[in-house]
Image 1 (spheres, rainbow, N blue to C red):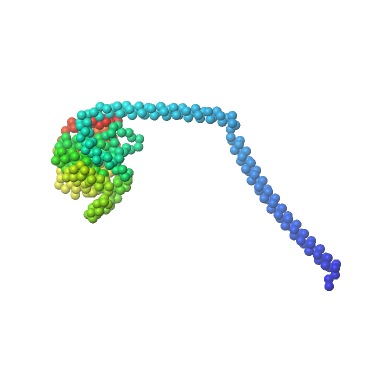
Image 2: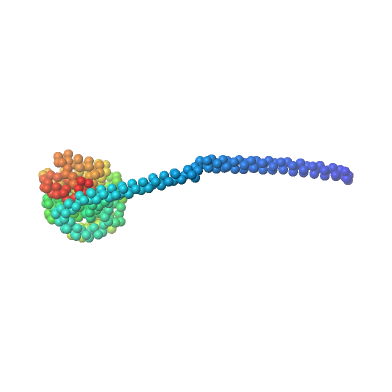
Length: 371
């Protein structure tokens, strides 16, 4: 049996071991706490320095007051200048619209409006008047139109439609072609004029603007769309045809001009020979694609069909580069100087054997004189 001394010695050694272990653990814990405290103090010091730096960057309250007052003065001056500019714009619009008073009461314009506005009420009541951004209408005939549930296309203005009606009827034109139909608005003016002369109109469109809801597209897409529409027509799925074509057909029936106008689904230029066959045209309205070479191709497609001695070729949207190029191409190809009429969409005539007085009348009765 172990003696009491031996047991006491063992216990003492065990206690000493535990004490040494506790001391080491205490030192490690103290070291970690010191490190954590130092890290925290460093972070606090960093935040304190950032706050002091930001505070130093701020001007004294006494310094901000003059800045605020100066900004208020500059804002007030700006608002005064803005109001002045708005007044100047309103004055310029008033000056421009003053120029519209005389042509508004041109006897031929008044007569055309009295004839055509009531007749086309069933059409315009179903359409929405529209302008491009930042445009104003000089009078109620200076609006374009579109289908209420479609983004594109836009039509010509009522005034432009009246002018083409007048030119066809006054010059007793009888054989017309139009590219493109859109939803038939221009064709209604033309067909009611051909109704007077005993003539006929072919109106063609690929209806791609309505499908794409944009006026820029590639020709291959238009061709594919035409084939799709023609198949729908062959299958007598008329309710699947473009809304623009349906509206044109409905409008022609409403106006009782179904026998005067044919609406065709086609692409220009490749579809034109099939459309026109052996016809000779004395009227062509070029208002198809307004990009790239398409307007020039549209002109090329109709040149072989124009009467050699008497024709009227009309262009729409000549403020666009592609259409402007097509006008000059037509002028060079025919040797005829273009005749510009300053309507909203700058219609232009390339005419041969047409009464020049009728063209001059159109120029005189547009409300957008020199605008």
